[in-house]
Image (cartoon, rainbow, N blue to C red):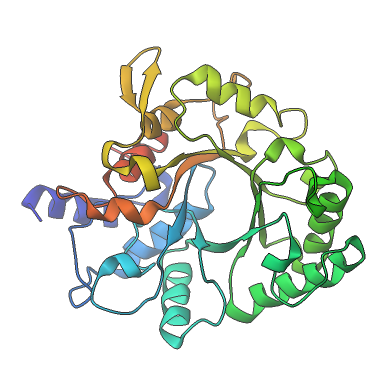
Length: 319
């Protein structure tokens, strides 16, 4: 790590939160034997930042084991300013190491962690429920019980249904979201990604954020069209756009035509973009993020570099 990065870390760690619009997230490429720890003031400011009104950094994280000597397997080594991380893959039967890792990123860094369930069929849910509408309340309780058992901050429903699926029926999906909120209470997160336009107005009363899989999006107009599918039900501040880093991590996405900046990586375009409904100072979209964010760990010059850049675009660090 060069001296400029070190100086920047020291400076940011002592800034009062009132002047800190975003936290520094520069971390050198590390292995688990040599974690980088900051002082208590830094983490206090970091947690306060997470609670402030700002554009969120979101990511689906795969391959989580919290074991071995590669930092890419741990939540705690993700960029500090990640707001919400959703576990992609096995999220149950957590090991003691995973539970410790989960608590660290939540309690020390203030990052909220959910897990992802495919919502087209209850075979994907915890428990062994027949895939019928009558079982939705019991299945929702089983999901909530799992969240509380392991200490997750909520659930992310990957809503990619087709005509024959149980939750393609909008009334069934509304019932699921209603039951989830009843079991989770007001403080836990409920995210819906995928076909967010299939959720009813009532359904959005129970869910916090629409996460659009805006993969390979090359222009602001295409992002706007995605927001248009939900704008009658939710405001811009509840809309998060994401790029596919399983496919495009090396270049930060596809080519994106920004009206002012020209051709830039699409994740950075998403960071700059605001829905046309954002007209007043202080208004903003919900945020942006990446699918399989862990792929970005392997950049040779700076791990997680594009999501770091996106965070700084959305929430520039105080000068």
